[in-house]
Length: 290
Picture 1 (tube, helix red, strand yellow):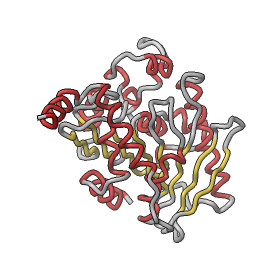
Picture 2: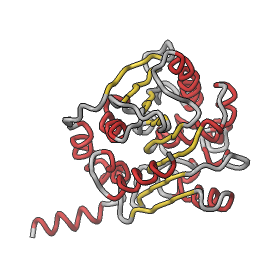
Picture 3: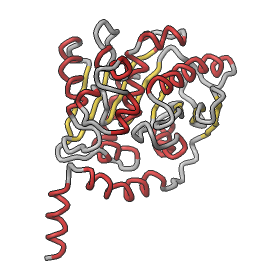
């Protein structure tokens, strides 16, 4: 009876902040658990003067030169996290022969979207130096990806053409974008102090510029994989549903959008530590895009 009551209560809480917080311990245990994978080399590289302006470069022992470079932004609500905590995600990609860059960036509450996007530009600029030093193979074919706040940054890096101009890049350098629980349309999210600090008032220029949905028109179409749970309490699915409609209308057959039934925010990131359907879908999508 106690077990039944617990399961009933758990189901009732699904889709709430309380349920998401209860999931955190299990999520971090799986995310931080070590593996026996030895097909991985890592290097921390500073790209700016601030302590948070660095990237982690993860490379397989044998790099496939024909595969794109992956740039992956971690989640954490623009306030928590650092790349090293998510090395389990890097392992998945290096096992497939990809090099992957996982950037760090300055965080809320001391900094906001304008500062963080300065870090995004500094990072992408520094990749030219890494290429000259022979640390990365190519910059002509890059796959961008991210979870949650990281998906927002990865999307802005692709769709904000002004960031490319500052970094001497263009949309031609990118060939794919994968997003999990993305805050793609910030107007679809609930009002929170963190969102306010990151993007400012909803009618502000900063809020507009931090919302990727505002920049997808007149873009070069690339394949996008987007997955979102319909019980996400941190980033409501409304924040990505406008992407589903607008991008599909503009560029038919370029977006692969999946709703995970009864799934929470952390469920959308489970592919990193669990060999589930989402992981298989991502691996298949990468093979097709590559």
